[in-house]
Length: 342
Ligand SMILES: Nc1ncnc2c1ncn2[C@@H]1O[C@H](COP(=O)(O)OP(=O)(O)OP(=O)(O)O)[C@@H](O)[C@H]1O
Ligand SMILES: [Mg+2]
Image (cartoon, rainbow, N blue to C red; front, side, top):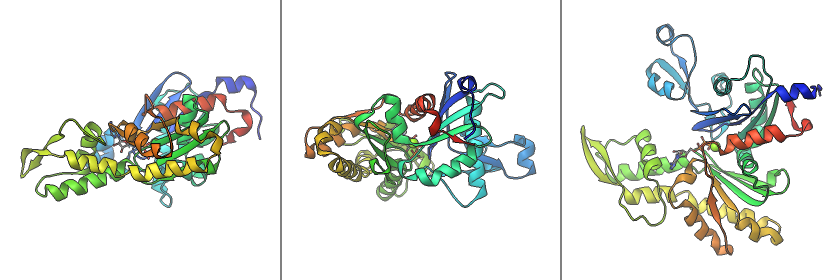
């Protein structure tokens, strides 16, 4: 392993990156942070290049100009979609864009900690290494929920459940680096809720014009589980005219659809943990990721898990940045021997 002098390490920019299916976030040791939708757009032809300039577009800009672009969502279920060169190039561009957003100094060395879904660690390590090799000097790849746990200082007898778009990732912390056995991923998360909601609403209101973007926006604004005190009413076009639709029951059913499997996995992981510490873990369950914002989700899981005994479930303060911030803390603290050279 090449030795880097301590002074050189100190000048390096440390960054934490959370590579997500729907959005990716970065936090850096220069105090800057930012996020972008995980969307990459390549101009389709010379007309598109003339109009947009010969460059790759990201996030909202991709949606804006989508007719002129080949649009790539390079992270399926948090794994770099394998096979196509375009996906690999797109991840590299996305990482480069995130790094640009935090403005490293010219020629500043970069030490990057990148979070990916728990069970995809092995598959992703090499792909991420290739994607980031143009930008970073050193790399560590960690699981997303571990990064969240580290950032919150929840290092011992805690369980993190990171509910994202493509996957729900679990990690039990017990005072050391978590091993493969301490981590689990399910492919039921936000995207799955959206599909359920679209299905239920299309069945109930066959004439209304629903699409995935509208459905996702409804979920982000009105998503709830358990009892609701208010009706969820939204305006949707029917034959061109806006009509009010009651979607309360469908919203609840779609949002609750991912929870039985999540509760079961959490219970199973806790049951396999050292019996002496199971009570402590059950009392320290932390929800992260975009879906942790669904109203009532903490109480719902608390009730489901209390089958095993008393428990406590809390939601992170800042789900958008919790992973990237934890990655940054890891990038600052990680001993030298853990880093991969590029
Ligand atoms: N306020 C909200 N209420 C309900 N759901 C939300 C809210 N905000 C975001 N979401 C949902 O959370 C999901 C995105 O979460 P997050 O950004 O953690 O995922 P990701 O990291 O991109 O995905 P993954 O971790 O699966 O790769 C999407 O399904 C999004 O619709
Ligand atoms: Mg995520």
